[in-house]
Image (cartoon, rainbow, N blue to C red; front, side):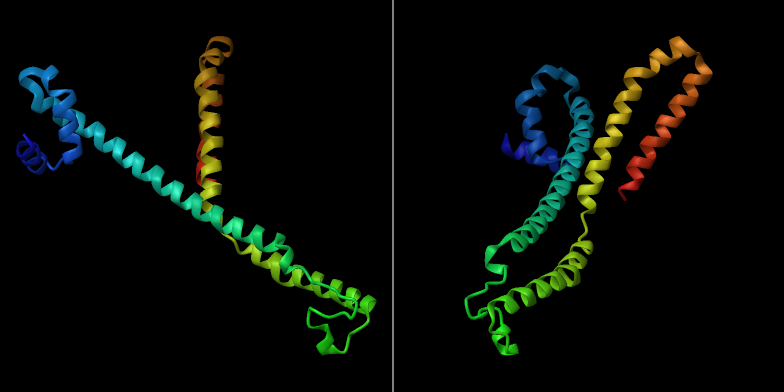
Length: 184
């Protein structure tokens, strides 16, 4: 039976996984038209597979973005990265500049820290690309608008007439399109 499944899968450009599933779960119930039924079910299987691949790719992109965000947060919040001031003003290179007084070291360190935050950290954060997260969130918003439209449009037709309802529907669909395109 394994060779038959492989042969059918190859001849019909179907996955072995699908043909095996069909033979185990559906073939007996299809009678003499099992090949036609298998072809029809294959189209649905392919569509599902394409959608699953798309979702998997989106998940990978989101995971990569989250890793990048976590690295930034870890770096900024790591106490080992903050300046250390000892009694002699040592530990952050200030002794090389002739600063050994603790108060001068603290003041100098504060100025340096703020300069670094505004000069390096914040501009670096502006360069981050979170387009996958933005697209995902825009999709959620658009789905919400679509659900609202599908749940309320019949009420508007009943209560306000077709012209108002069509104008409302057009406006809502335009908003959905803008939400989805805004994430690209």
